[in-house]
Each structure stands twice: as C-alpha cells, then as structure tokens.
Length: 178
Image (cartoon, rainbow, N blue to C red; front, side, top):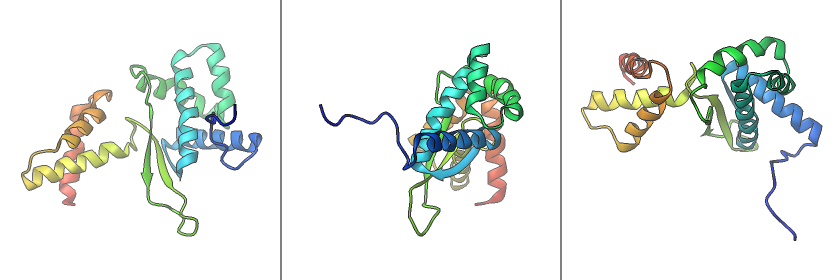
C-alpha cells in the first residue's frame, strides 16, 4: 500500500539535525517558558515538551534519565522540571503547552510563525489577552462574549489562586487604558 500518514514532520533535516533542533527548542522552552519559531517546528517541539512533562510527573529513575536525554543543559534545568513544572502540572491530564499562530516573523520567506508557551506560567499569552478583553468589556459596559467567558474558565481552571490572579491582571490592564 502506498501513501499513509507520516509519523512526524521531517522539517527538511536529517534525523540527527532534527533531534538536535527539537532538543534545543524544548530546552529553550523550559528555560524561558515561551519561544517564537515557525509553526511546524513549534508543533513538533510541543509533542516532545508534552512527553518531557509527562515523564517529570512520574519522577522515577528511568524518567529522570530520559529527561536528561531530552535537554541540552540538564544540570541547569532538571531542578525546574522536577520541581516547579512537575508541581504546576500535577493535576493536568495533558495540554501543558500551547501553540499560538502569529504573523510571519520573516518578511522574505513568509514562513508561518507561532509562539510555543507553557500554560499557566508567568508568560501565558492567553491569560494576558483574556484579561485585556475582560477589562475592555467592563470599560465599555458590555456583556462578555461566550468565547471570552470560555477563555476565562480555561485560564483560571488549573492555576492555583486563578480567579484572584486573573482579577489582579484585569486591574493592571485596565490601568493601562488600552
């Protein structure tokens, strides 16, 4: 049988180069909690980052060794992965990362760009954008749309102290008068 779906994106690279690229992207994601890259690279790095966080939640010797193999600087990032990130995503069944499409960053190639971020972190883009939408609706005196209400639920559901943190963000954004 000819055809069939591909198991992963090849990204125009050979196997070793592709693995190094993905390890580098995941290492940057864990360190910075948000990275900007092309959309196909972000989707492949998202798969690897989700596997890394799932391994961190198991926290046994085998998973620690696999995590060390996924990161370029494990000595620097292992405490963060097995400490902060493990606790942050302990209750989540999955979906610890988010890919947001953005305008192409390179005007020459017009490659589709994206932001890959860890959800419920300090650089959570959807949290900030939803807070801005709520602040705008309150300032204009209109009811929130169904989409805005759905996003409020999404960004506060798993975040510890989520409702209070969201209200604080809304107050900060409303002071900006966007």
